[in-house]
Image (cartoon, rainbow, N blue to C red; front, side, top):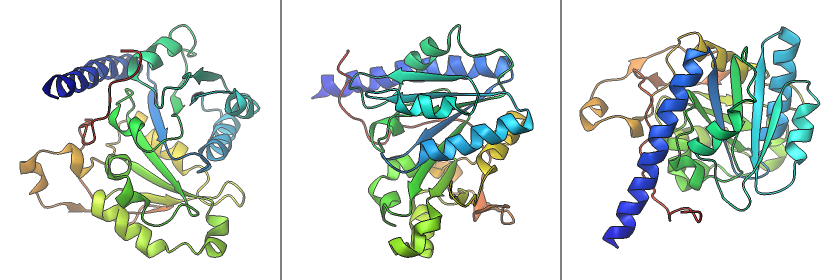
Length: 270
């Protein structure tokens, strides 16, 4: 058992080293990476389609890398926006890792890219433990998934620097309780901004792109409680006004870090 724990820690430590290197490489070229996590069917591809199309319309150089176990369906959808798109087939692996991402970006990512969107495999468990070198981690949940998702998957929602709620156009039909969802997010990640979106009616359109560009231009992303030391958690939060397009309570100084609260078995290839 001890050896198993050591192996898990070694795998994650190796990934973190690669993630730090990739983050530095992207920063040096003026690119910010945005990681998107969600369960399957949450609507992150539809949301990404609208953000990529908006970026192209505004003349903002962006690119997208999307990961799936099989098929290139998402890449084909995203490519219709006219921006550079790369498909990653993980062949059964339930998450992306920083080494994999660096390999796929080498020789492909256009040099003028300002924002790189990374759509991870649909999964709220494994991807939460892996830093990909992103500077903005976004977790999505649709109104059809239930208000208790943040409590069931505290790693995914607790480490998010931005939370997006999708498919709000059917919130009433789905019986979605907005206040309960917000309260549950606050329990695992106090102060994180929550933005409500709909790819169909346009609610929240452009907010993701705006937040990514702000971080790229030097704005500090939200720093989740789970990434802070015990001493920092005792520091009183700074109250900020409500953000346009979203809801939040407090924010804290940011330093990018991803602890690994839920270790899982070593990847098969190791």
